Length: 296
Length: 194
Image (spheres, one colour):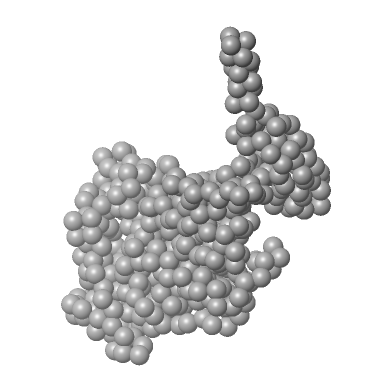
């Protein structure tokens, strides 16, 4: 447990403004990190966890770390406090989008539609190809207009959300570009894999992505934590409660491997296992929650 | 005098009913799964033009399909496009006769998007996001038109008596035309092939 204490000590000295103060955050970019607030996205929609695939697409593919593997190193937690993350569009997709849209973007139809279609519609090359298959010829300018309009619609949907999709207002310009570049590889846009973008981001920012894009689908920002009563009544503990109740290594273990951490007593519970997240990323979520405390 | 009066009635009644009739029959679409979606229409009524319809027609997008798949309308008709699906859709046409319009992408349940079809045209409608979706607005020059049902049946009500060119359009088959004389209820069967 000592490393946790060290970690928290580092964290305590670096507050406030850990996120915004990163010196190496790439091209002088700062990040407008905001706390997570209010009831979970599912509560917002009035949906029960049993009736949705949202947030639960973690077992639809992707590498799975072997059970009980010490995939997260003891030394990594303090380091993540001072060392910025290198984040690709693929990483952003994984921590912001994958828990609903699945590893390949196909979603869980009919509830969660494929995002691949909407991305394909932004590619002049693919649209031209689709039209040619029908024997339809359309001039370049018309195609370009349509695809740029499709891109604007896609980006608007990303930032404003939809009927069931949360708004991803926390994503900033360069992040959106990096994400879109990755989405184009999912849609098999020609040449997309050569145009990937890497960003440098502080841990708290990475944590914000993970919390807002994944955890917050089911977990309220504030409210009851885990106790004998809530555990048996299926109440999902709040994000804020982790900080009081669970050390970071327990949270990391729970998120990535499902089972309670070694030496801890408890049940597996209903939470999906997110083995595609790294220990550093889950630690970053913990850091984010500490530095930007959840609000009601 | 009384005889003449009766004769006048006898003459008048059949004349009145014979001025127009339903043009009906069946269209066989050879090689197709069913006989639906052919559009039968009167190509012109000599000396007559038709006012722009005040009522709009509609095409919905529901269950990832344009509904109806084929919509015949009179020149000048405004068609409203709806999205009753759970996902965003787009509507565009690559056809110049319909002005290559693109209504953009819009979210489920949001307001209707209108487009007025001002020229004769068989406009292919596509959704940029869902390439498998397709529909046709068949813009014809007279209000005497009908689309066939799955059994190929069609019925065009109130066609004035006279001789016309009747055309039949189909999304996948060759358009045909046939000289037809309408004299009261008139039955005409037609056949389409590749």
